[in-house]
Length: 465
Image (cartoon, rainbow, N blue to C red; front, side, top):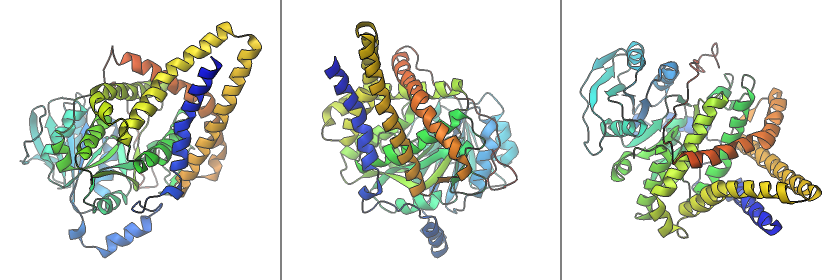
C-alpha cells in the first residue's frame, strides 16, 4: 500500500513540476513573442497602413445575454483596428437579447452572403448596425453554442476568425498582436491570454485588482494565472495544447471549414482544438500558438452554485473528448504530445488518480493504526502545501514577467487566496473532477452560468466593477 501511495504521489506531482519548469523564460522558443510588446505593437500600428491589417471577424454567440451585452458592445466599437467585423449571433434567446441589440446598435435588415460549407439551424434574419457599420447581428433558431459559431463562421467574410464569449472584452492591443502572429502562414490557430474581468483594474491596463472580489474570485484569478502562464505556455512549447479557451479563441477560417466546423457537444472549445490537432497531424508545418500579449478579460462565477455548473461542464467536456477522440489518441499516444498529455495528464493522473487516491485514503483510515495514518496525512499535507505555494508564487511571478502585476495593497488578499487555494479550493476542484466524470454518463446538459448583470466600462474611469 505504501508503495502504491508513493507511486501515485510521484505521478501526481510530475506533470505540474514539468510544466512549472518548462514554462520559465529560459525555454522560450526563437519565434515566441516577447513578454510585454505593447510599445512595439503601438509603434507597429503607427508605422503600418490599414492595408497591412489582415481582415478579422469576431464571433460572439448570444443566448440570453442581456445582462452583459452593453459591456461587450462598448468594447467592440472602441477597438482600434480598421479591418474588423463583429457578428453577434442571437441563438434563439428567450429574453430581450435581440431587442437590446436593436436598441444599442439600431439594426436594419441586410443581406449577408454565406459560404454554405457548414450546417446550422435556420437563420431568421440578418441585420447591420446603422451606428457602427462593421457590427452585424445574425438572428437564428436555437441550436446551441457550437451551432451559433458555425453560423458565424459561414457568414463571416475575413481570413481570421476570433470567437469570444459574450462576457469577454479585449484590450486595445489584442487585435494587432493577433495580426502580427498570423503573419506566419503556418499558424492556423491560437489562444489569447484571458484574465478575470472582475479583477481588471480601472486605473491601469496591466494591473489586476482584488479589492472588490470575494475569495472565490481571488482563487480563480490564481487559477487562470496558473492555467495560462504555466500550463498552456508549457503545453504550447511541447506542441500539446489541448484546449484553446472558448472565451478567446483565434482560428483561420479556412481551417475551421476544413475540419467541418464545430461539433454539437458539451465542450466545443476542447473539441475544435483536438480536431485541429488531427488536421495538423496531416500537415506537418502547421501549428497552434499562444499569444501572451493578445489579452482578454472574461467574467467568472461569483457563487459556488455557478462555479459548480461551470467546472462540472468542463469536466464532462474532458470525458466526452476522451471518448470521441479515443481512436486518434490511441494511434498517436507516443507520437503526438497532445495525445500523450491529454491521456496521461488530464485523464489518467487528473481524473482516474482522484478516485484511486480517495480509495487509498479511506482504506488507510480503516486499516492503519492511528499514528501511521496521521503520519501519512501530515506527509501528504506538507508536500501539498509546499508544491501549492511554489506553484502559486511562480504563477504570480510569471504574470508579472508578462506585464501583469497586483497592487501592493492586495498583498494580504493574495496571501489569503494562496492559503485558501491550497487547503480548500484544490479539494473542491477534486470533487468537480470526480462528480463531473461520473455525471457525464447521466447528464450532458450545458448548464449555462448566470451573468452578474454588472456593467464594466473601463474606458471611462468613472465606472468600474
